[in-house]
Image (tube, rainbow, N blue to C red; front, side):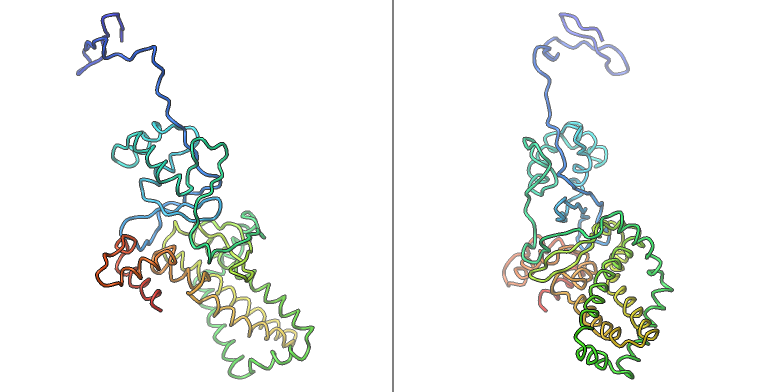
Length: 368
């Protein structure tokens, strides 16, 4: 292109030169437009589409560095995925437009970042120097507090990989058959209270049973991690904290949201399944040694399984029910569900966006 004082010749239709008047040319004395470069918050992970969702519209899952799981629309997920700390908002708009299939302008991108991603803690404000965020968290009362990592992600991945074979269908069937035989023998013939009374007569054995119970809790968490690994997802760390006022352990299996519903339910049940495996091992130790305190730990293990299956609090039963419904945050739906049952009130959008099957499951859970 040749630029003259009178204008310029630029390629036009068919490759022929087209005259452009000088008034249409950019003023070289004016500064070029500078667009902001957004950044993701520290530790943010994008896990992709929530498979088997109970929502009418697809949802995408992101996990902040503080452990809070955030649900995003497809457009917000694409915008967050295009943020790399180097692209400005104009570059992000070009990339998102190609992936979204529709034009998304730079103004649209800037609006979504400032009014959606920053309030959610996915991105950080432009004028903030560090990448830490102080975004709101849900379920503050029933969240785990005082997190402490016991096994880092690398160690959990290694141990989970070595235990994944226990989730093969043939092995699961054999374990469940053996568990039924164990319970028939313990409760029907031997007498479950006999070993418990034996331990109560020797208080020193209470410490041994307590140690076995703690071991069962740790093994429970590796059940979640190994099931997550078996399903093709990547388990995170295993840690502990305080649930209300009680010590509790947890396993980071957020990556399981990107696999199917069956894989998530397998992961949810992996903990109590490993409790059963642990009880079978204790029963085997009893037959090898004749020490009844092993059966005391087996007896207590049944209560641990029943406790975990309660859906009222954030234990395994809560997550099993949430994955059956396809909703990762059941507590967040309590208020909208209650309001939707009030005669004469419009249905809240949080409820209207649910599939019928998911709405029935959540409503039943709230009412009971």
